[in-house]
Length: 94
Image 1 (tube, helix red, strand yellow):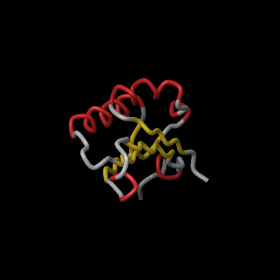
Image 2 (cartoon, helix red, strand yellow):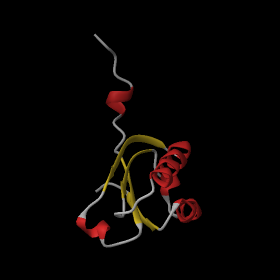
Image 3 (tube, one colour):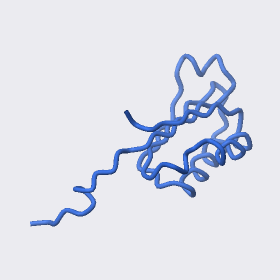
Image 4 (cartoon, one colour):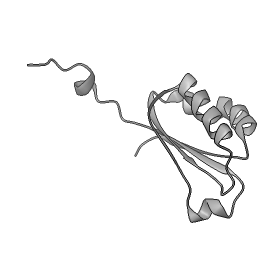
């Protein structure tokens, strides 16, 4: 089962404050999903993505919303560690 962390934050400042104690620094390669509220601020989302990309090796970012998020005013940030495949990193071409 992949290592994943879910953070519920109301804005970029909350996200920045939660990151140090979230346990994400134990991850190497990761994927990020940001689930947004109905009235999401695109600048907040951009800042969150830039912050996490500056701290971790992010392989994919997905941004979206779901019915659950439309009734909430919080962002849900899911950071999932991607299993490291040493064969892909160090394989020789033929």
